Length: 92
Image (cartoon, rainbow, N blue to C red; front, side, top):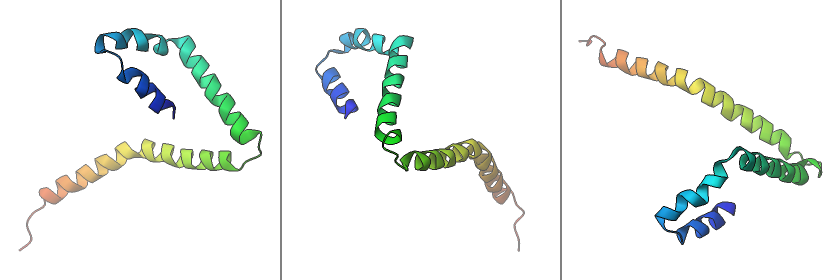
């Protein structure tokens, strides 16, 4: 929902106006306030209501993180397999 309103706002702007509109959003203070607001919303929505969703978020987040950490090794392994298959001696 926030992305939709953001795109509605910038759609009506000229390209030369965008840097002055976006620059304040990349300051350290703005990022801190945005993260704090997001954490407060998360706390109000899930933690205070005694929901089990945070446990699921941690489980799925851990699985995604471990997949992303292992991905470069898997890609190297698959490239090695492909290279070995291409350069294997032909069986008659």
